[in-house]
Figure 1 (tube, helix red, strand yellow):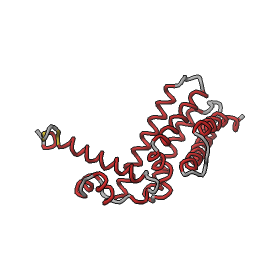
Figure 2 (tube, rainbow, N blue to C red):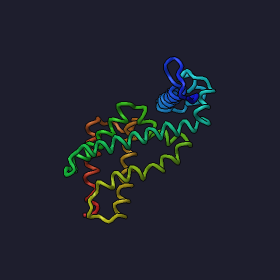
Figure 3 (cartoon, rainbow, N blue to C red):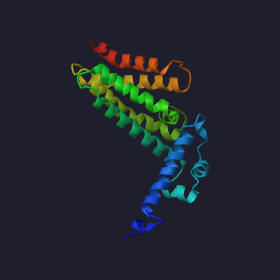
Figure 4 (cartoon, one colour):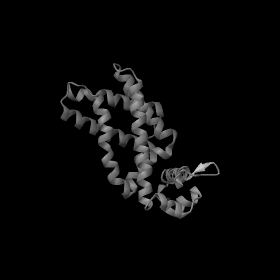
Length: 203
């Protein structure tokens, strides 16, 4: 039996390590996703998670590594829920697929504003995420590209998808930071129109 598999108080060392990492990530999300997300520091994360710095450095080399880990986890979640939403909609109903994707993403970033701020606002203020944000664009552009008309050549599809992802990101960012004051349904409806109207560029 390995040290990590031995139980203490009903849990293994591996479980306790995973639990501490989860607490650190959750605290990182709360602090990074606050309205003033600049307050995230190793000390603040440890205080919020009620863990010592020893356990922080057991999981992360420094503050920036935690920030990137929180961001990457949210990117993976966003990608997963978008894929699931589109897959659940009828394959031959483009409006339904577009609305499912937009609605799901809006729910993700608005129902838990912390996630929206980390995904869209934190890359603008934290140097550790500036490169990560750019690197993740192709992943989301790929989802959009797959929904575009097959009658358009691949290069045009790639450029159109990248432009649309950038435009939608700016729209959601304005909504989150309060510079765009519209209701949720109007936001969703407008984004769906953008997605569905993109084929007109190639008509």
